[in-house]
Image (cartoon, rainbow, N blue to C red; front, side, top):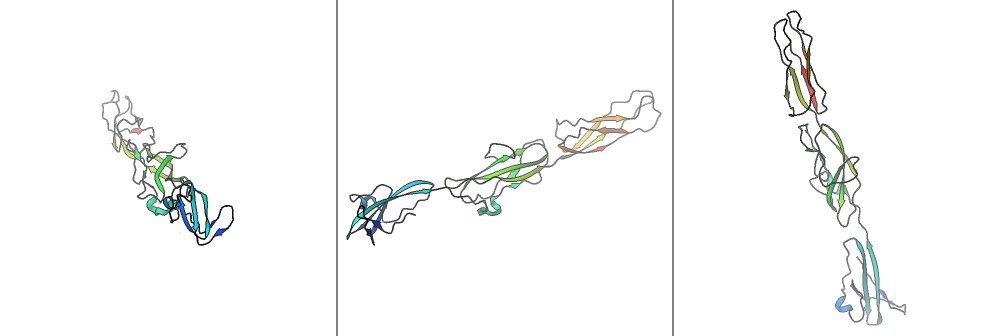
Length: 238
């Protein structure tokens, strides 16, 4: 707020006590101060540089005109003003399903002076207005910031982590029976649990039985490629 309480007569250097002060955003003169000026002090609300003109009058003194150039800079944004409601949160219970999944929940409320949120994966150079998402199982480190409105600065970056758990599957070898002196039947298996069709598990089955083996029971074992999106339980057969 620009509020002048007295004025100085131009040239004479005489202060005008108890003056009536008129304010305007344009230059005031003896000819226009009553029409263009206002007795209310000028209040500035937005960032920028503004020149405020004033005109001081008292019937016992010569009038005085003046001006003030005011610069308003952006204010710091306070992320804490919204409390915990102003923070994004890691989504819980995420498990690999082969699809893109959002890793965070957006804040329920934005802090004062915040126009929007922005996010990025840690290490990325550019920011996005969209919440980060991922497909693969793992722990992800992200950054977020509060973008200030026209009168507030953008905040520093904050870090947050979220995880996508591995899907659980069971790989079960299937029993086989065959007569002696014949080729071992093709070994097979089945996959149960949260398996995503088309994913490569690199499953292989093997047995100690041979065409010439004596009658009896022989173990059929299964192995896999330890795909990082899964946790597997292996079950053998005979």
